[in-house]
Structures are given as C-alpha cells and as structure tokens.
Image 1 (cartoon, rainbow, N blue to C red):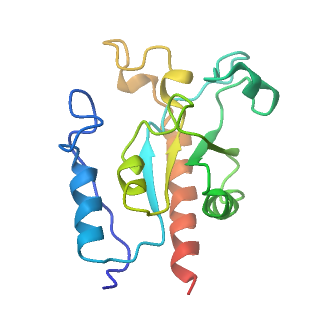
Image 2: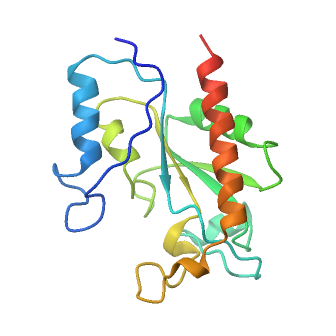
Length: 177
C-alpha cells in the first residue's frame, strides 16, 4: 500500500507515556507495520526552535563529541542510530544548502543519552528508517521543560529555516523511485 507523504502529529510523547505502548507514534508505527505499508523514512521534529551563538552553549552527552561538533548551539541536528548512515547522509545532503543554517548529523548507538528521545524510536521497533531533527533540546536549552522555557526564548526565524530544510528533504525523498 502506498500512501504518499503523511504529516502526523502525536500525543503522549512526554513522560509518563514516553517509552510506553501508549505513545501515539507507537500506535502509528504498529499500524503501518501491520498494514505492510512501505515507508521510505520517518522524520520526527523534536525541539527545533532554541538556538544560541554563545560559545559553550552547546553541550554533548559524551565530552569527546566536542571535537567534532560546534561549541555554539547555532545549528540543527539530524540524529539516527547506528546502521542508518545512508538515510541520515541523504537527508543531511538534502537539507544542507536549502538555507544558511548549518546542519550536523550523527549516527550513534542507543547507549548515547538522547539518541532515542523522541517519536522516531517507535519506528525503529518495526524496522523503518527514522531520524530525529533537533536543536538538541536539553543539551542546548538549559531551561528545557522548566517554567522559564517560554515562547519568547525561541528563534522563529531559524525555526522557519529548519522547516524549509525539512521540506526540501521531503521533496528530495519523494522524487526518488
């Protein structure tokens, strides 16, 4: 069954439902699998609006990552698990150049904290390629999930650039046979 492109919004991704069968994405992934729907890739948007140009504003789950990635939280990230190098590289290539917002990517084992902290994880269970597009959440935004984590702290211009980049990636994936 070919359904084309779907845009889906989920509920229940946050605790206490995170990592349970009650996550909306778990239900969707299972439905796709049970109906034998072929999925080229799932792109999950997770925290895409907080940016900082301050040196040292970007933290990492493993200190050695500082060697390969910026110290400023002024980029968008693509996160995939090990074994997804090809799809992560493809999406990164489609996103890069769509705007001037830098794009970085990582394929990491699940033992790295945060690699599976969103809805994309639900699709991995069923063998689908799925990536997370993220501003890295609590590795950048020190007010993440605090009362002080308010809308005025978001950078809507850069968030718009992420949307353009993701749109270009979707168009590129859709053009492929």
